[in-house]
Length: 170
Image 1 (cartoon, rainbow, N blue to C red):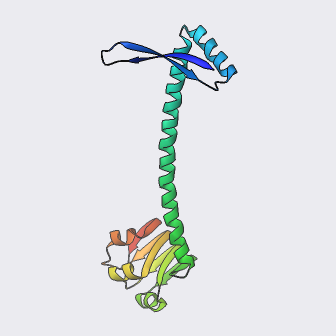
Image 2 (tube, rainbow, N blue to C red; image 1 turned 90 degrees about the horizontal axis):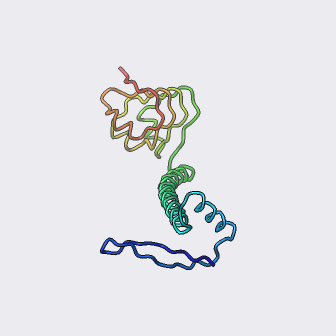
Image 3 (cartoon, one colour; image 1 turned 180 degrees about the vertical axis):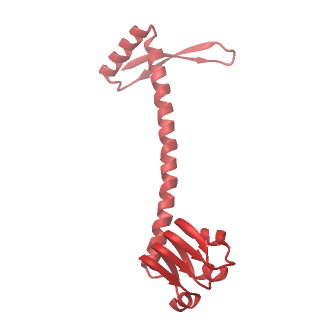
């Protein structure tokens, strides 16, 4: 058992001393705290208080990091669910092609949304912004994306990840 005097300030600004009993203190740790107190000219209570302060600060940071990790995991969950939809056939994945030219008629005839992935050069001919919205799920890891004139690049970019270059037909 470990007895410690702790001090708190009361409303009048005076320090209050309180004896605290803590069960289960490791004898070796207590001896180390006593030795540290002796070497630094502090009381054991001061050393233990500082240790608790540091521990609580560290665990607060760990909790913050855990919360950040949980938020990232939620993003991964969303990506996983999107991939699951693709694997269930709701989205057709077209991937691993050097060069591909796609027309509006081809997109419409497929009958489902498309995800273009890992393509060196992707040319989207005669598409409108509505076609892009209606038929294209995503464009991922494309070296060069070629769009028809008049299509708003920002609307297309909202569906893009890792696209190196965008050019316009014409």
